[in-house]
Image 1 (tube, rainbow, N blue to C red):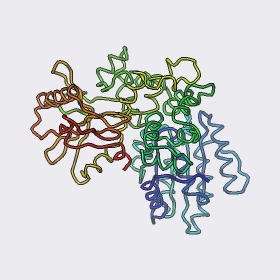
Image 2: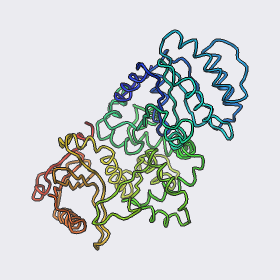
Image 3: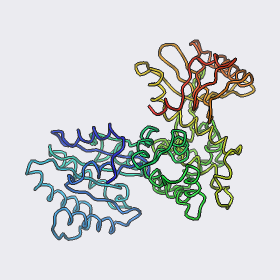
Image 4: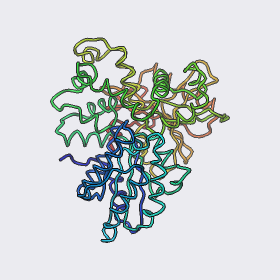
Length: 474
């Protein structure tokens, strides 16, 4: 039996929601393959009163068939197929009434909820009526709904303006594993990898449990990547289209945004992205960007500027799998051992550096912990100059409430990093550009994040503090 790795906070909260003395309506969402279904099914093995999974891309009739199959399995009775969702929820209510009367906690789980909302099916209205008219009055009932189509879950369940408006008692955004959780997952599955290998696989696949489950422990990182992306099987090559098709009904308009962002290291503003797409997409672009942020594909941040202008926020691709796929797969040559043959090339080295930056941005809470900033308010972002030539860029800025700004230099290295005269000069010039353009009055502290630490030398004292990859595993 697979073991639940990590998810301590989610487990604690779900146990709290299913043991409270009031009705609970819990919405769980997150990107495809992140482990939503596994979490609920494993945590509540043998405890679910009713559970149904929607049929991906299924018709209304197929969804009704799935409902009947589930109802007959849990009730042990033959049931006529309902014609509408109102009738289906009436059948469910009558079944649950018997359980509720026994004063035992009832846990109802609907998985892949967005699939059930087929065109003109009335599913959301029927669900709202079921909750408002009866389920919300049962103090020993917990309703858990789950879906990978995150934008649908947020718009139609969490932020619904109709019958489910303000009815969700709790929402849970299940995010990818952290580096530490990834390490624990691999160790639990018999992997004897050092932290550099764990970090590299994270930078290629992200902390997605299903993807990690495709790795073979008797293969190296390079061998696994070749098998998953560049072999005849190529399972992770096919995943790209599946991922976006599951998340969005019109995936092409979303993948065009992702592909445009993959080409720009620092990210793009909305107006820059609109120009890069080469078409008038102003009408729905804002909604699509919001959807991609909610799905953990991109991030949105506002840089420190003398004057904050409308639409000045920057969008940056942060999904590790998408970044790896778009960097290598479309132009990969048809050769055996493609990845292994390209280790050490400028293309791979550039990707390692860029992905390590993204890795640090994804583990800001661990960085704050390593720097003992848990009790100090902070704001984290990247920065790029707009008025100074040549353009300057800083990987990560951490503004602190104690009037200090950590200016991070992020360097991927497979040995101790050495700061030489040239790089030291570049770093100081970037910091000075940041000070002039933002008119920052705070103390600016150069801070290094690298893999194995800093070699002591002539310029090593430039950094006020140095963090290593071990700090990212906190």
